[in-house]
Length: 201
Image (tube, rainbow, N blue to C red; front, side):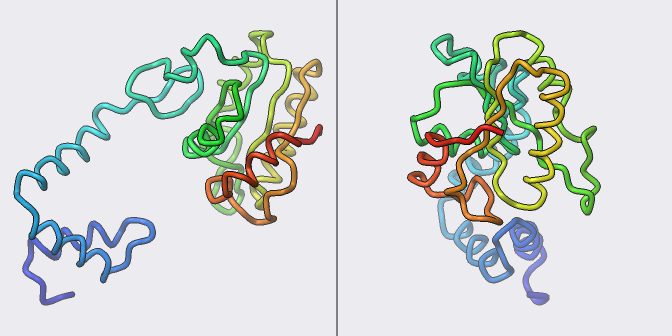
């Protein structure tokens, strides 16, 4: 890869730094961009720039949106008594695809992880407390996955809710989700069963 022309090498290096892409895949993508019409490349470039400029964080759930509140939070037909806590925004997308869950969400912003230096101050705990303080939430569903960091975060949140909001029921997705897996990689049917038969904590 060292003998690539400068402009091509710069693009390959950028693609190769993305998750799931190695140098060979990055080179294939870069070469593809050289084959398609220049206007298509310009459209792609503008879309990438607008991704950072136009996306914002929903003030009510902490997820990505192009307007705040997002479509889910502004939907008055959603069950305000149910709050599903997910680590990242892609967890919302996964659960929405099941068409089973009709409550609201909180995107936590990750999981507690001492190894990565992630502590409660790095997560949207204040937003969670604000939502729970509204008095509308009757049940909080922890959809955090089943990794070690997920379990640690779940334990922290369960204790927080029990201490500060004892009237709110805490549940988790049923254990149809394989141990060690992340929510975003769970298939639709398993997720459906886990949500339907969630367990009280």
